[in-house]
Structure formats: structure tokens, C-alpha cells
Image (cartoon, rainbow over all chains, first blue to last red; front, top):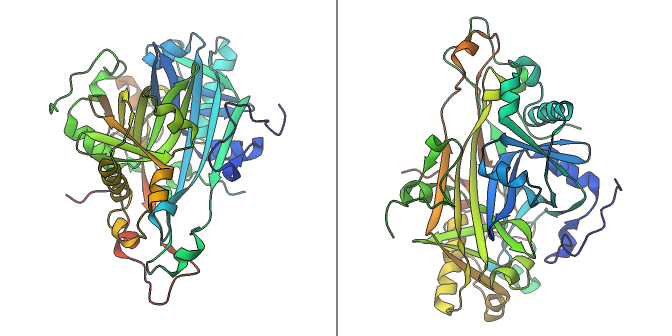
Length: 221
Length: 221
């Protein structure tokens, strides 16, 4: 895949084009920090948007779910989808109500999601998905049975047509508004993990693992 | 509007129907805690999913944006949309990888978003949107000019066809898996606000207002 993604008419950012990012590295960084996407698909003219987990492996995104779900039954046919990942970083309080904004990073991927048939790719995709959401957990869990794997569908969406949008930094007011007497600034927002809550039926000696105790989506480079 | 929302074939929750919630009060509670939605719409057969802020006023959702945006240009024509709001509450670590889950609350609204023409409704919708995201801010900001109002489009989506889905509580493992030796439990997740960062060009005497300092989406009943 090329490192830079040439925007198509469909992925070219129309509004606030200065916030558009088309390079693969930035998009992957956003995708790797997030783990919930919103999948859009159309059934009989009606769009549906469903939240779900995802994983990335190389230049592919993987989605999974029950083989019986409406979403996966629809997607299996190879219909066009849009997968959007949004990270919210803050509220931007300008002096004018019009210049209020949010700091965010988002990626929009267009394409056709296809059912993963190959058992090896399916297993590797499920591991990637699990490790994406919670690194270290897969090998400490009871492994999936044949029956469980059969009940799970996995879809592959190649990262071919996408765009990212980033708004960061402080307030931008019109010059004449800097004299307007109000507070202005940024309220930072972040998704944080609390203290893990142990299940009531833990076996003796089971303590909270490090990956659960120090859970964070921020990558320490 | 009826208090209970009878699911249609399109909003009936297919997977994990025990997690489905159709009452209006629960859906509104979720919508009122969130403030970012993902809007799905279809253009020439391709679905798009775009994150944006929203507000609620009675039984209507309001979206806004630049009159020039691709989304709003498309939606103005009155095409079918799906607006989804998702609140993430935690990661659920079961003993089996298959029973891993997430705690979340989500609302999916289907319908046709229509452009708000009436200037009074438009202004009230913008106030509702602003107060939804940041209560108390509107009246402390420099008010919108005619030109700014003209550059902003507002859309109304009536809450007529919707469903909500809630997963809460602890781990649910298959009975035979409780003997499997691993940690199990819940990692709570929450969106939290940090210390507000004041703009460098504040007028003397401007201090961080209470609504910015104590920002939280949790409603204290």
C-alpha cells in the first residue's frame, strides 16, 4: 500500500480542508488508539450505524460479531460500508459562540467489507482484534472452540480509500472578538480506565493482571 | 409521542434481544449523557458515517454544521439517516475469550432529517445544542450574527423510530469455565474532563467558569 493516500472525490475533506490528513501513518495511529468504530451500511435504502470493536492487521481492518447479527448478515454479501473511528480530545470554548469547536481525531474508511473464509486468517484476525482492544489478554483466556469460532463471523476491510481529520490546539477567534469579555480556552477530554472490578467467582490466587490494572489507550512511544 | 416505542422491523434488536430497551426515558437519558453522535447517510450507494455534536429538544434531535458541508448538503434533501450515540462504560473480561464483552449504552435513531427553515426554531435549536454540550456557555459567549447564522445549517430529526441497547454488570461465563484459572472482571471506562486550559489572550480578570471547571456528562439526579 502507498504511504500516502490520494483522496478520491468521496474521501476528500470538503469542510475545513486544513484539518484533513491523508497519510497512512497518522490514520493508523488514530485507529490504533481507538477500539470502537461506527460501521455504516445501507439496507433497502436505509442507512444503519452500529458501534462495534475492531482490530487492525497491516493494511486491513477486521470486524467481528455474531454470524446471526443484522449487520454481519448484511455485510457478508459484500456491500459498501463506511467505518468511522473518532477520538474526542476536548471542547474548545471560543469567545464567539460561532467559533466554538471540538478537538478530535477521526478516520473515515470507505470500502467493501468481505467475509473471511480462511480459518487461519479468521483466527489471526480474532487474535488481532482481541490484542488491539486488550493486549495480553488472548493467551490468558480460555481459547475458542470450533463451535464458538463457527458462531463468529469476521470481516476484512482493506484500508484503500480513507481520510483522517484532526483538530487540535487552542481557541481561534475572529480578531475583533478578543476584546469580548468572557473566558476562553480548552476543556481537555479523555477516556480513562478505573480500578478493575474482580468477578465474584475468581479462583483463589487470581490477582488483577498488569494489562487490566494499567489500562490505557495512549501509546507510550 | 408515546412513552414506549414499539420496535419496527428496522429497529427491533436482533442480537442479544435481552439488551434491547425501547422506552423513551432510557433512550433520552443516554442521548442526554452523550453529545457526539455518528450520522449515517447514503450518497450514490455509498454510506458515510460522520461524527458530529447534537442537541435534544423534546422529541427532536438537532444537528448542525456548515451549510457547505457534504453531510449537510446531502441531508437537506431529506434523505434517510441513522443517528447513533454510544457511551462506553467498560471492558468485560470473561474467562473464555468468546464471552468477552463491553459494557455500553447506545441509541440508534432512524428517520429523515429535515432542514430547519424557521429562524426562531433554528436559533432555539442552536441554543439547545450549545446548552446540551456545555450548559451555561451560550449566554456568556458573543452571540451569533445574521451572517454566522446564515452560514450554519440546522437539521431536525424527530425521535419516532429508535432503539436503545444496554449491556451492564459483570462477567457472564459458561458454567464449566468458572474452573478455568484466569482473572476475570470489568475494567470501567469513562470520559473525563481535565483541568481547563485558559487561552493565552484572556482579558484581565477572566477566571475559569464553574461549568468549565467541573465539566462532567454524568447527571446528578
